Length: 257
Image: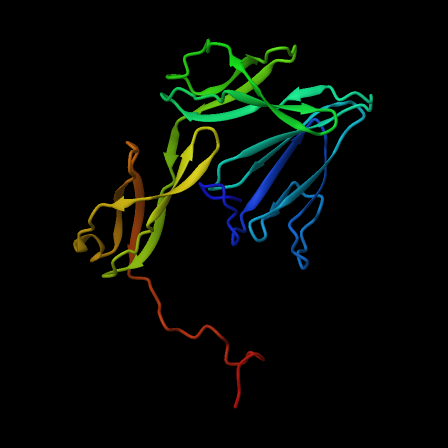
């Protein structure tokens, strides 16, 4: 788990989900000795900002793709390759390029791709991408763009995900009459490609008369650079009991002198 600068976040403990295609999930780990999670499960909580997934190849050579997703984080995909032992250090594949861009923003593709060779080494190779046939400025979806590397018959491939804002998760709470609601400083922004993130929100002012008596009301919030508004649903009630001891006097756990 890294931040926007690519630095590992040492206290990150996000639950990470793994999807493996082209091979088998052999196990997961996070280095935490006391962890009781199944090593065969397709998910693992990060420990010290890291989680490990082990994959097993099939009897057929080819790419094995691992995709990691977690709520509040951008997804990540990587590909490894299983090969036959031929003794020749030939080009096995050109590593796919994954690009995620918001609708209306033209995707920027890299000028090089990584060439993967049979001995495990990699080399940056210049690539010339084909022109985009789809109108990526208006249509959400997943598009594939091919590219050519000089002197190689293998084509490069860029997988472009074009997304838009799907909505903002509403917030709900209950308060006692006369008590001002404490609203969160962030809300969950959900995109239509399944990715979500928590973003700062500014709530509209609340008139004290709205929580002076029992009832319901809503508060709108604004997220920077978003036309979609956040919403908080507030329920005000008089049915509130405070400072009540819920332990039974006959309980064996009741402390005694």
